[in-house]
Amino acid sequence: MVKTRTTQYWIPTLEANEKLTKMLMENSLNSPYKDGRLSLAERFWATGNSAASLKTLPSNTARELKRYARKLLRPWPKGRYTPSYRRSGGILNIFTPPWGKQEDELWEAMLDEWRRQDFPNDTERQEARRALKQKWNHTPHPFFARLTPAQVMIGGGEQEAELTKEFTKKLNNQFSRRQFESEGQALVDTLTFLRAWAIAPGKDGQTPSEIIIAERTALLARREELIQQREASSQGE
Amino acid sequence: MSNIRNTRSSRAQRSPHLTLSASEYKDGVRQADEILRDNDLIPLDENWQETVLHWFVTEDIERKALADYIEEHQEALGAAWAREMLRMEIFFQVNDHNIIVAHYDRTLSQYPRCIVLDMWVADHIFRHQGDFWRARPMYQDVQEHLPQHPKPYYEVGFMNHLLGDLPSALEQFNRAAKRIDGYDDDELAARVFYNRGVTRYALEKDRKGAITDLEKALEYKPNYPQAKKLLRGLSIRSWLPW
Image (cartoon, rainbow over all chains, first blue to last red; front, top):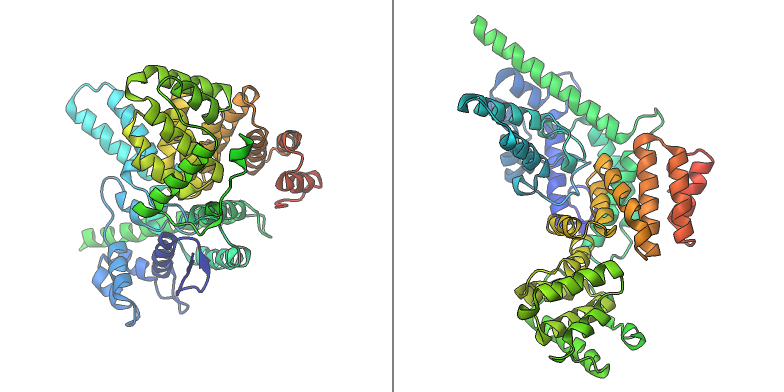
């Protein structure tokens, strides 16, 4: 079991700890400043200039984290959002053992369906494949706790960061003194605890899962808006 | 059988780690052989099939699947394979997760793949090694080859729940529930209905259905504290009594 340096909280596996670090960076890029300035991510979407955005990271940011921030501020692929496999996926996904294309049953099923279809020509066949990739990007994924790959790509925001603090504290209280028979058992118990927490409505009647999805959806809309504004202004020049 | 069941060694309680050194593995095999010798369990050329069938499985579905496997692969198996299976049975009984997986990987993987064995080893890979992505296709293969068995549906459903995919979890729990009558395992039946009840309520707010499932879980396993607690909570209309 890992007591993380970042949080001083109990985390069941090293892999989850690594994802937690990634998640904190994703949250931090999406968090607006208190004085109303744009967040780092917003600045990037508005300008397309990642170097300028990265300069505003605190000077003592670890090199490894800066490297991850640079990856986060790369333009997204035109096709399938495969970098989502390597994102943290936020609190709903940080404990899920890492997986990728090889394990992706959803993409495999979508491809199988595409392969079975008849197309009048190769152009239409390729067009259908391109459309399929976009469909995957925006379909709730069974292995991302039903976030879409786009919602994973965007990262979490301020509310998710707050919920994460609340959850890691609860997790620590629940498990930090418990002896587990194996690392796998610690992981299974953590995930069971997480899933119960994620669907429990809070005082306002909303569940953590609903709050997280709504915030990520809003961040995606904000990204789209700023990118469109940038493109419109560059066409006007 | 009772002698073997009483031979739980300190191995089950020792601190686990995912990989086993060659000497630890050899040591485990040596201990298993001692138990087999003490119980006169030495498979011979003339009785290896019966010995394995007698000692390794108790459920009809599994016995039939194992018998079919033995018949299909007679040539490749034999007394040596039977001895490895009996060693595995000892490892299952002492519940030593690491040596179970090590024995499967290092020794039994040299024989044709046995779906019944896969199902039981997958539990240790999933729940104790935490290797979801290795266990998942093993369970899915069992679903394909033993479609009447409830366990692989329950396990995939539980994994889907852990991955945060409640609709697929419910689908799998429904499939497991449909198959539970033909399978004599009260513990598994209780878990199937408990988890289906929880998922139904979380997903569909189906309080009545959830209560029915929890009551059914308690019929199979009257001493099931989580089911009792949840049932109490649902009956007084509060959320999340766990």
